[in-house]
Image 1 (cartoon, rainbow, N blue to C red):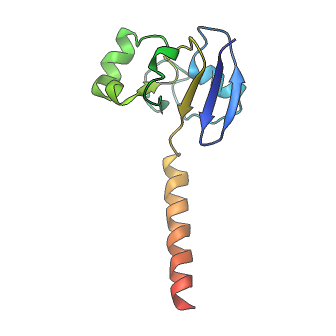
Image 2 (cartoon, rainbow, N blue to C red):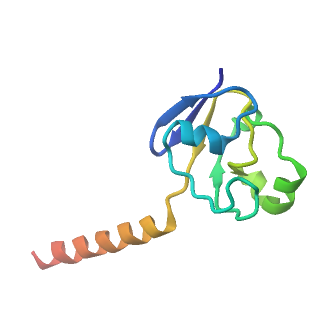
Length: 116
């Protein structure tokens, strides 16, 4: 069975071929944002596949190609549409809210460091 590894969490799940990356993320207990429940409607579940690993996922279908467009060339895929064929590593982007909070905390820490 193919193994899907999710970065930066470094968690993995073994899944059957044909399983979506979104389903694999749930098995690995990795949070991939989605609102539409996997219908390719919200475009929130984007993940990135490192160069050279594209063949580990099935080729994008018409709906995914139309919605993602040129981002496919950068390795961006919709996790609800990308189906696993072989071992693959997937990079899950940081949640925007979590990124904003992290950035604010880092700024506060930098200001504290400057005071001391």
